[in-house]
Length: 237
Image 1 (spheres, one colour):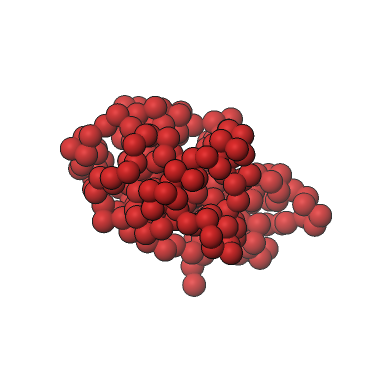
Image 2 (cartoon, rainbow, N blue to C red):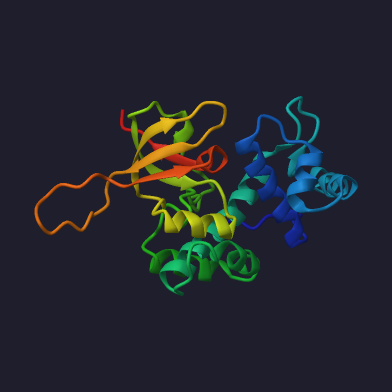
């Protein structure tokens, strides 16, 4: 992975990764939104943005807000790749649970070498996703495009395989584990109540434990709409 001249602090890389993620979630990246994500004041965020712009990593003149230059995008994906590989390594090799790895990976991501990163990749059999279902950027700085659908956008009766959970909040991840709603789980939307009401999902690929040959109904889980909005599935065409 390329080393980028001009990135003199770990904090600069953190900002680039945050800008990249905000751009994936919103149409426009603003200084105030970036400051909130980075837990700093808007003036502090603006000061860092000036440094990044002077170094050629961001452009603040675009009409759609703060954008990354190609060099900035590659630097951001470098850190994102390392973070997500660390998350996989921490789960598969170190025995951490998916609700613990975001914080641990954040502590380690600036400390490991490129050789360590490559060894993690090999030991984990070249993973393509982190434990939360986010795609892992490739070494060349590319990130495959993957159209996913929020479960709240499904039609009643429509099925999908849960691929990504859009939250790193440990309490949420632990709760989803209890509900058996983790990446790889196939679900069917049973009901989406109006006015941000509850969302009912049927879990389709669970073993029901029946020993007498009788079929049993698949279990269902009822979620609040805000939590359901963080679940993204791939839908068969």
